[in-house]
Structures are given as structure tokens and as C-alpha cells.
Image (spheres, rainbow, N blue to C red):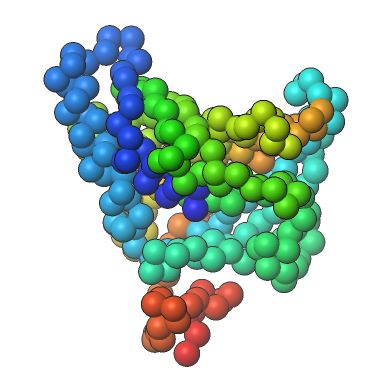
Length: 245
């Protein structure tokens, strides 16, 4: 979910958006919707309660260079804990085997960051590199890149319901393409309704190899702790969903 918060922060800093609905709102209505989006985006993570959910990732790979011959590389099940504005991941099963490695120990292409029925206004946007917080790394090389994409937003509340981000990568960077898309939906946490990530897709092309991770977030419930001690300004949850004393 980290990347989701990064996107919200970057979008709030730009405002380079325009409506793309079949019957777009007039200029005044567009400005009103965008003002609500800018106001809601930076407050998104602050409005979330402490919670625990399951993050299931299905990893696929295509080495043909065509994007038409996908093979399943494996599945990863993790418990995602959101506590005091911070995320922690605890792998439960990696490629079908129960495991206890840390989130960063899992090999291969990873999605970090990573959490109907209505006609929503769709806006295009572009974030320049100097305003971007999107960091992409591979084989020891890292870059902060500009990106662009689409936003589907609730016209009344300004809540982002779907976002697509495509990185504008340097020509000499090892990765040629990086696209991230997340779908939001209703989630009940401790009896209260929230808007939270439901599904996400993370795609990367490196030479002739295409990697795609399809992610599902499920089983949201409230994080409950009996006590907390500040560690670097925040309490630290242990793998059982409790706070270390």
C-alpha cells in the first residue's frame, strides 16, 4: 500500500487533471471536483484506522517478449498490518509453502505498496519528476521518476476510487515499462465503513521479460493492542498483530 499513499501525496501536489467522461462536467464543476480530490488525497491514510488484512499476490511472467504467453510463477500470501500510519508485512505462504522470511527477503519481482455500478468522472494527470515520490529500483539501480495516468473519483466526496500510474522512465534505465493500477471499494473495519484497496495490478517490462502481479486485499479487521511503546515515534506491531512491550 505504500505506493498508494505515494500516489495520493503526489496527486495532491499537482492538479494537472482534466475530465474525460462521456459528458464532462463544465469548468466550474470540474474545478469543484478537483478541489475535493486534492483535499481528500493527503488525508486518506490519516483517516484510516489501525487494521490488519490479508494481501494475496498472484505472480505471472512472460519471457516471450510479446505479453501473450503468461505463466504463473507462484502465489504469495501476506498479513498486512497498518498501525500508527505505518505498514508491516508478514509472509504466511510463499509459493504454497508456509514460511517465516521477512517481506524484503522474498525473491523475484515484488509489488510493495503497496492498499461499481456508478458513472465516475475520469481525469488524466501528469506528475513531473521534481514533484514525484515514485521510486523504482532493479538490480541495484534506483530512480525517482515522473509518471502519468488516470484517476476515477467520486464527484461528491472527492474520494479516489481507481488510479492508474505509468512511469516515465529514463531511456537508459534497465526497466522499460512500469504500470501500477489499484481499485478501491468499501471495507468494514470495526463496524465502520471505509474506502480501502480491493485489488491492484503491478506490471513491469525488463527487456523481453514481462512480470505482472495481481493483488487482492481481503479480510479487513481492526488492529487491537493492549499496550504500546514508542519506537522511533511509533509503536511496533509484532507478527501476531500485537504490540511489542
